[in-house]
Image 1 (cartoon, rainbow, N blue to C red):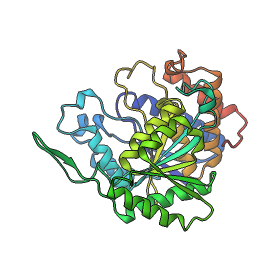
Image 2 (image 1 turned 180 degrees about the vertical axis):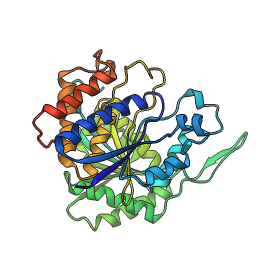
Image 3 (image 1 turned 90 degrees about the horizontal axis):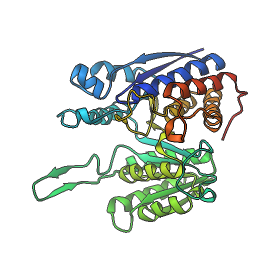
Image 4 (image 1 turned 120 degrees about the horizontal axis):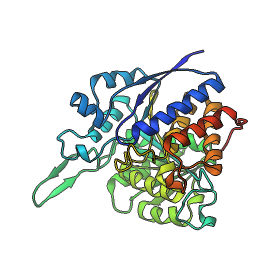
Length: 353
């Protein structure tokens, strides 16, 4: 039996608290499902800046490259806002170091307590995956800021579009067989290339239905008919915005996990919420999104039964309680994490969709 090497980056704010509960659940899943793992905890983000002056120290860079998967806590906070070196710089460097290019965000209603702003009949049945391209677009193009003029350059290459599109089509083949590609092809040349390349890739997947949607109308449709979508693939900035909107529609970013994947291992797994420094140390943080990110990690490492049991344990626990204040309860971060770990250890394990 091989041993999974998992790098843990606790991060800042509530990051260390939520990651600690995910590790607690990992221990329970490993015992029940009989897989071996080795955890290495490494400094990252603001905490690493305080300790070493860098958000991604050489020790951490080497450690994550040697791992099979990386579980990361949230980073950042106001104490580093005025710093010339910011925690977020470390995240961009980390993605580059790992070679990840596809950010995968599943959007589901994990609990009946989910506080979706939509009417129940609209929120019912939400089950989509948003695949966001991570290496191109406005965030990485040439930029300039002057006193009266500024610009950001949006650049995409055929290769960048093709590889993330293939990841989306492959996911759709294992789901409901539908891909919606989102762009702004009526205005942007980069989107015209995006649409053309995605359509060419679609020819290799005749069992998957492809549709196209402009980003502004897609924002409306995610509110009007979110259950209609299966896999959504889009460029970096559009994906950044739409995935947060979809998470809110599904019930809030406190329950939203994610992975960032490349051509091979390791993948990067993290909750999409921030470091919430206002509640750090109070025990009020909801660890469910980080625990669900752990489930994605284990699934990608081939531990599908363990991943399914964690998803099932999260749903059972959130439905029955205890729950943290964001879901209307008074449980602490540790109490909810412990309850989910107990559910992993004691609940009959049926594969969930």
